[in-house]
Structures are given as structure tokens and as C-alpha cells.
Amino acid sequence: MVSYREVKPGGKPFKRAYVAVMLWFVGRAVQAAARVDRAVAREFDDLPDSFTFCLGVEPRGPFMVVGKSKKGRVKYLGWNPAGKEIDLAMRIQNMEAAILLFTFQENNALSACRNRITVDGDIPAACAMMRVIDIVEVYLLPKMIARLAIKRYPSWSFRRKYLGRIRIYFRSVLGY
Amino acid sequence: MHLPGYYEFSARVKVVSGHRVLEKIPAELRKLGASKPFIVTDNGVSSAGLLEIVTDSIRSGVTIGAVADDIPQDSDVCIINDLAGIFRERGCDSLIALGGGSVIDTAKGINIVISENTYDLMKFSGAGRLKRALKPLIAVPTTAGTGSETTMVAVIADHERQRKMLFVSYFLVPDVAVLDSRMTLSLPPAMTAATAMDALCHAVEAYTCLAKNPMSDICALEAIELISRNLLHVVNNPGDKDGRLALANAATLAGMAFSNSMVGMVHALGHSVGSVCGVPHGMAMSVLLPYGLEYNMHKVSHFIAELLFPLAGSEIFARTPKHLRAERVVTIIRKLNQDLHDATGGRHARFFGEVLDRHGAHMVEKEKIPDIARTALGDGALFYNPEDLDYDDMLMVMEGAWEGVPLKRNLIKSG
Image (cartoon, rainbow over all chains, first blue to last red; front, top):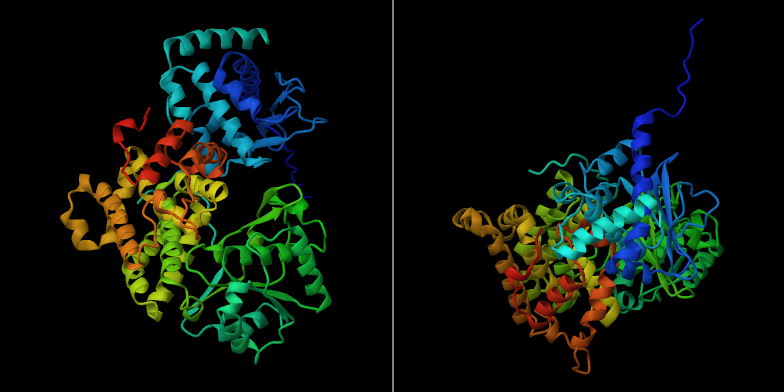
């Protein structure tokens, strides 16, 4: 008898793990940057209170969720969007697209242009979150790599760039 | 030719173009299995006599179920539900949208309500919410500019929530676009100039922004050539049928290009100038186009340089040294704006400082520039722009466009 093989979804555990770690760290860094960097704080100030944003990979994750409390405090809310009221979801369409993005082979804007990221929610809020992620990448990455991830590398003061970087790394690791 | 590592392209609309092609509509409806269309149009189109031309051209072939000739500029959910009710009541089976972008978008909205058998249009807003084909829709554009007859997008107002909702789906692309020169013959010269410059903007931004691809490039280049060869002549000779048809084709080609490659900062700022100050879209596009090219020049001068060929022809292209071609493109577009300004008796604006309302007051007040810049920061078109723009960059571009002076290149940030 001929056997018809069933192919179950899943696979690529190392890529999933890599993207999960990146999303975890970026999520905590967004929380830290909202407390350290004025431009990031301003972007969140313009968003409504209780605003919740999620970024992740379709169809099974990983995800990261960042939200703003009623008091306006930005917090990393974990990896699972289930059960949370998400105002803005940015979904990377598959794991390979996520790898291109998180290994900086393709920058954020180009990834959106190539329909690798779908946006479900308010477009102005999505623009604001893209700017936040760009700023966070400048803090987290050395210039040579950050230039691959964003359209234009900003010219910041020494204080903003290096002291901010130390503070954001410190806060991201400790999670406050 | 630029071949990106990845791209998507879809242009599934059937285009029927010619001097007397409205008569083809009944046959097209039959092919789509329809026989009783609902015609949707606006007052302006109706009072210009275009509705009568259409009904006279098709009445021998089909029963027209109903005609709605009072579509407002920004129709909303309530109007769409009312019109869908008429569609059902009269037993119509298809739609003919006769007009510009807002009429075509309204027809798309009615089509969603009818085909999905719903009263809640808003639950289909966003991308990819429609899962099946809609009723047949034939678009007959009466301006040569928006390209809505080829796009998969509809923008519909939700006045209750004071928002404009975006609907994106391949099912929203009209089945047929009918380009008949009679539909644009009566368009006044200033309007002809502004709408064609809107189409030029679609083509130029599609060719120079981040989602460009070989398929959309071909549409964009052809559109640019048709506009540069015909626009000034049509503005000076409004009765030129061939020129009118060329511009209608250019707008459709540009629509195909930008609905796949999208647009950039010129549209982001143009949308804001429209929403903050009420400046007509085409006029804002004409003013901003050279500034958008100047701003992005350091990133995409090689793509801008390639536009010299369709804009100015082979001789000028060959005579211009390679490193000067991109700058020459900007000069030619500024000269085209100047020529259109002269040909329309000053009605075609070259910079925002000379855009006046009917009382002679500035439509774009200088104090509104910060509001315009802030609004533009939330426009999705910025994703597609080759260079990043922050608030200060927006201010710089808008101030230049208000004064009518070229951008100071040393102030444009790069990194």
C-alpha cells in the first residue's frame, strides 16, 4: 500500500529561538528607551493611554507585546498576545522574513515595502512605532550594523548616544 | 533595469480605451454575467452632461436599474448603506462608477455591502478582509489623474468616529476600466493640469521609491512619456481628443504603477496639505514633486536620471552628461509647472504661497506648516520613501515649497 506522508507544521527551531530572543530583548529595550530617550517618550505620549502594540511572526509566533498603562507608563508585556486587547499588530509574514529583518539583511522600511510585514491597526500609530524601533536599534547596535537596519543613521550628541546606550542596555537586562 | 530581490505585482483590471468605447459597456457587462447596472456619479459629472452621454451610449444594450447622481466628495457609511438599499430594491446586479476617485471609492463601498450582504461596512476595513469576488464593477473615470480605476484600495469616511477608513483587497479592483476621450473633453485647463500632474507624481514616485519593480517601472515610464508629450498641448487645446485619450491612458498606467510600487514623501506631505488646508490633491502634488525629487536626490539620483529620457526625449537625454541628468529632471518638472501656470492664466500654482481660495486668501497659511509636518509624520507613504524624514525635514521641505525656492542641499541630512 502506498503511504501518503502527512507533513506537520513547525520546524526551524533555531531560527525561532533566535527571533524569540531578539524580540524579547527589543521589547525590553523599548520599555527602557521610553524612560531614557525623550524622542521615544514623545512618540508614546502621542499614543492613547492603554495602547498595546504587538510585533511578531505569523502564524505561530514568537511575539513581543509592549503596552502603555493608564498612567502612561510603557511596559514590556511579555511574549504572548493571547487574551490582550491589541491596538496595533505588526506581523512578519513568515520565519524567513523575520530572519532577514533580525539579521539586518533587510531594513525595517524595505521589509514593510516588500509586504513582509502586515499592519493591523492605525497607520499613524504604526509610523510612530517604526520610528521607536529605529531609535532603539540605534541604541542597541553598533553603527556599522544599525546603518543596515534603518534608512538614515542619526547624528546624535555623545551624551545621548553613548550614555543612553549604557542606560538602555542596563535597564533592558534588568527589566526596569 | 532595477530587479529587486523580491517584489509583487498585480494589474488585473481590463482596460478598454478609445474615442467611442462607452458603447462597449453592455457587452462587457454581459461577459461578466450582468445585465442591470446601478450607475453612481456626482453632481458635477451629471451637470457637465457626461451622465447623459453614458446613458445614451449604453441604454440600447442594458436596462439601467438606477442612477445616483448625488455622491458627495467624502461619502460615508450611511450614504453607502442607503445606496446599497436602492441597489437591492431595484434588483440591480452590477455597478458603473462614473467620476473621479471619490465616486469610484463609493461604488467600491456599495459593492462590499451588497456582495457581503452586510450593513456593517466597517468590519471589512483594513487589508485582506474580503475573501470572495464582489459584484461586477465598471469604472469610467472622468478625470485623468487619480488612477482609482486600477487600484485595490477604497477610502471611505466614518463621520461618526471622524476617521477615514482604508479598505484594501484585490477584490476591490474594478473588473473593467473604460477610458473614453469624451469623458475628459470638458475638463477645464487648470483641472486638466492638476490631475495630470497628480498622475505624473504617481509615476515618478512609483519609479523612485523603495517598492519599485520592473513591471511597475514599465507602466511608470510610459505614463511619464505620455504626460510630457501631451499635457501642455491639451491644456492649450482642450478639444484635442487624442491628447485627452493619451492623458487618460497615462493616468491609468500611473495608477497601475503606484498601486504596486506605492508612493513616497510627496504624497505624505500632499495628503497633509489637503487635510489641514483643503488644497486640492493635484495642486499639492504639482507643487511638491520637484521638492520630493530634490530631497531624495542623494539616495536615488540614478533612478531620477533615468526619467530624463521619457520626460525630455532621446536627444536631450543623449546631450545631457550622465551626472547632470537627475538635476535636469527637476529643472524640467519646474519648467512644466511654470508653463502650465502661464497656459492657465496663473491658476496652476507653482508654490504654496500662490495657492489662493475663492476669496483671494492663502489656502496654506504659513502658521499651518507645523501642523502639516506633524500630520505627515503619520502617513504610511513615508515607509516607501527612499530617505527618512523627521519633523524638521518636513518643515524644511514645506517652507521651500511655500516660498517656491529650491531646497538647500547642504541642509538635507544623510547618514
